[in-house]
Length: 466
Image (tube, rainbow, N blue to C red):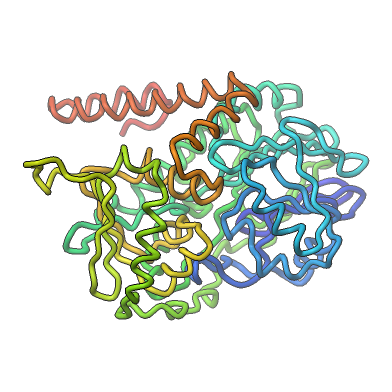
């Protein structure tokens, strides 16, 4: 294969020019992440590992540990060349530089030459994620990994149209479990939809994105993990596999390509490396990665937890309290004093049932998203939701961008507005549209016309209405 790429699992892709590996993305090569909750769906072969280690450049999309995997980074020698998005916080750059790596921050929407026939362009976004666009000869690969479009759909679509459609690819997350969905009631009973309901919605969404961008092929990527902890294996049935993609895919004019393949971009041939598609169950390690659910924090650790969240001042307008239940002990972190006569049942709050060890480690590093995505922690929601405020403000703004105050958030927003006003406004318009649909759905349910509303909405989206 003189020119092409292969998918190795999760978000790791390797691009080749003249048979040489020139670029690898998001190298998670061994071990687990999210406090032992995620393991690789299939271990890398010796040849695959060798290819990643030999790639001239490595690109890391964002700071989630299945993309920025510190254990895997230790396999690379000092001086290795890394390409990074121009994220708001330089944390990733500073870490890699401190380890002796050669780091280049890619400027927004500017091509970076990788090899004679390969060049790459990076589009970072407010979600503290990024999209990598790779031109390989006369082919174009849009690697979304698990990033939202964040207003970049028009630009990407215009870029895709410059190429023969049969030579355009979109690689993207095909799973719905890369976020907190371990939502429970006060008795600990899960409140989420059945696996197939969640899976079909995710696949329909993926198909709409591929159609919007105008690509010829969709490549399953960024999703090939398996839940490995005893307290998270319950989530494995919710993972979206290629069989689910085939079952629910709604755009037959767009080819679907399974994970674990080698794609020759000169001939168009596809080599299947893992034809069975079965998860390697030996990746399930069991145990709870050192977490003892009966262990309660010390008083000093409770104080540390309170300080961690009270520092996030941006939450105060959206949440009244957070409760943590750890080792059978429940503590409350209040953000807004309850007004006189307020009914406790009407306060906006979230209750997290969490194990002590992982929780305290999260406070040390500051990335609460690691607890959410692991899905061993359980979450109760009271008159609120994780989106559009808690997760973006805590996991993205505070965790990845170090934004804690309203003034800092204003400066953050100004930064992305100045970078590209049209993309910023399109992102806001998309958010407003989603809120409008949610509000209309709630009204339809109150009026008893939820079913007709759902049918009409699905028809407008081009999704199945049955």
